[in-house]
Amino acid sequence: MGRFDLEVQEMITLLKDRGITDERLLRAMEKVPRHLFVPPPFTNRAYEDSALPIGMMQTISQPYTVAFMTQALGVKPGDKVLEVGTGSGYQAAILAEMGARVFTIERHMELLSRARKLFDRLGYRIASKVGDGTVGWSEFAPYDGIIVTAAAPDVPDPLLKQLADGGKLVIPVGDLDVQNLVIVTRRGEEFDRK
Figure 1: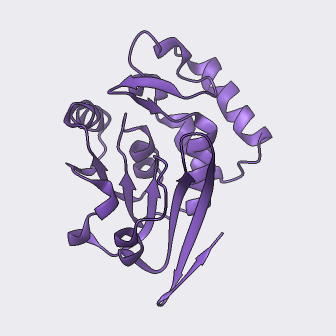
Figure 2: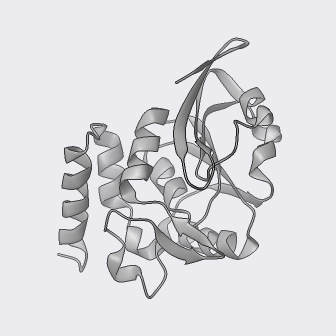
Figure 3: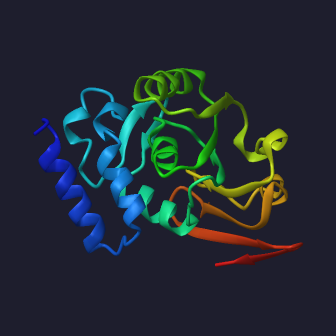
């Protein structure tokens, strides 16, 4: 048994209790060592259901948020997924563990460098770059899924254009105080919002 095994099991139980049913997602969250993505002095709290600071005024999302958004995305093995906001790299690692081909954008080079080292250490092949995520990453579009990990005042138009037909975009929309999770599904030139 590893140092965090009990905390991992408690996290998985909590996620199931809160309605996370995607078995592949739960297995990925069980397998990806979240504590490696949480810098000291917060490493010991890695499996709590709370957002934790990772530097550069950014946080690693709480496990439930990661699980809820990933489940809403409906990732299948082989899907091409764009993540906007690499942060710690944890969300990208979960997607890669689920068999997605992951492309991730981060605006802070320092965070991206740290995430890239972890991807290498854990054996994940994840394409990453520094940039403005609101413009997406058009050279690899279209994407089967796009997940945005930071709130936006509205859904960025370039991201909609980079969705494949039938693809989904999951994004928190709102301000610092109130956000709604918006799920957009592309159907040809139409975009269904939930």
